[in-house]
Amino acid sequence: MKTEQKDNYIILRDEKEDVNDFADFLTRIHDKFKDQNLVIDIQKYGNLTLEELLQFLKLSIIHRKGKRSFVLVNDTINIDAVPEEIHVVPTLQEAEDLIGLEEIERDLGF
Image (cartoon, rainbow, N blue to C red):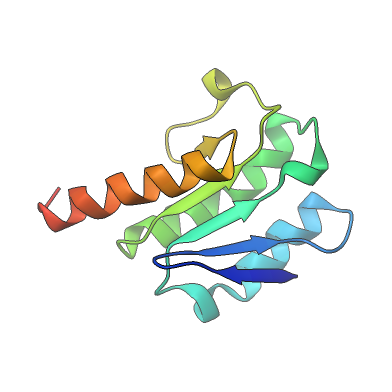
């Protein structure tokens, strides 16, 4: 796994070729990143199925309960089919923007 630290979040990228294994791996090591806003860059997988994307659902719920952002980046998934418990955006810039908005909401007590 590759990590890239930004000002208020960290980007995590898989170095292997299996999105299900990556989701399982992130779930196992979640404690290492639980206090940071996370951007999970899964653009390299191209056309993901909704089933593959839902492998991140449990992790997203757990992470967001800790008052931290959890954003997946993939530009091929149909956003309308994605449950609202998972934030999926098409670009890294939109992930950064979403985290900024969520930080503001948390600061305001939402």
